[in-house]
Length: 274
Image (cartoon, rainbow, N blue to C red; front, top):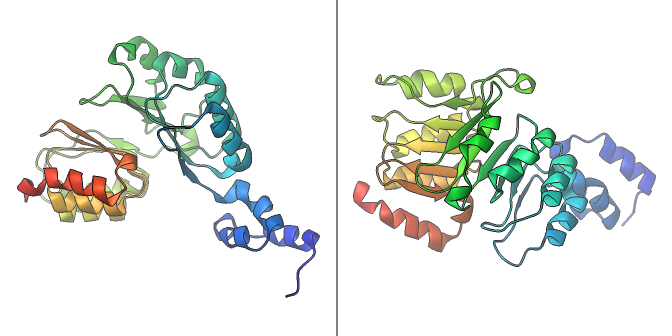
C-alpha cells in the first residue's frame, strides 16, 4: 500500500468539506489527529464516574467541532469546566447539564445568544426567577418545565446571527390543517421549541410531520400523546431533548431514553392511548 506524504494529506484535508472528513478518522493516525477537532459533533457523558478532569481532557481533543453536549445528570461542575466549554466550543448549539441558575448567570458574558441551555434535576429552591430573568430578552427566552425543577434557555426570533428566524411557537389558533399546511412548512426548519395546540394530539401522522419539517427541534410540549406518535419521535427525531405531556404532567428526557429497555418502559405508559 502506497502512503502519501503528510504534507499532501494535510493539504487534501484542508480542501475537503467538513461533512466529508469523517472517513479520514480511519486512514491513519496522522489524519485522525488532523480531523478529530472538526468531525465529532455530539457528546453524551455517562451519569456517573465522570470527573471534571475527564470532561476537560475530552474537550481538549474534540472541542472545536462539538455542537451538542450532555453532561452527567445531577452532578455539580465548577465554573472552570463551563468556562472551558464556552470558550473552546465555538460551534456549540446545545448544552444540557445540572448547572445552577446563579452559576449560569455568572457565565453570561461567555454565552452566545444562539446557544440553547437546558438544566434539569436541580434543587427546586435554587431556581430563582431573579437570576433567570437575566436571560429573558429580545434575543433569548426562558421556559420552565411544569413537571420538575428544570428550565430551558433558547434563542428567540430576534437573534441577529441567526438572521431573525422564528425559533419558538408557544401557541396558535386551531384550524384544520394549520399545522400541516401552514405552520410547520413555513417555520419548521428554524423551530427549536414548539407547543402544540390542544386539539393537535401527538399521533403518528403529527410526529411524522414534525420529524420531516423540524430538523432543529429541541423542546416539544404536547396536549396528549399516542404511543405510535411517541415511538416515532423517540426513534427518528434525533435533535429532540425533551417532551412535556400536559395531560400526564410527564417530562420525558430524550437523551436518557435511547436504550430499548428504557424506551419500552416509556411506551408502555401510552399503550392505553391508542
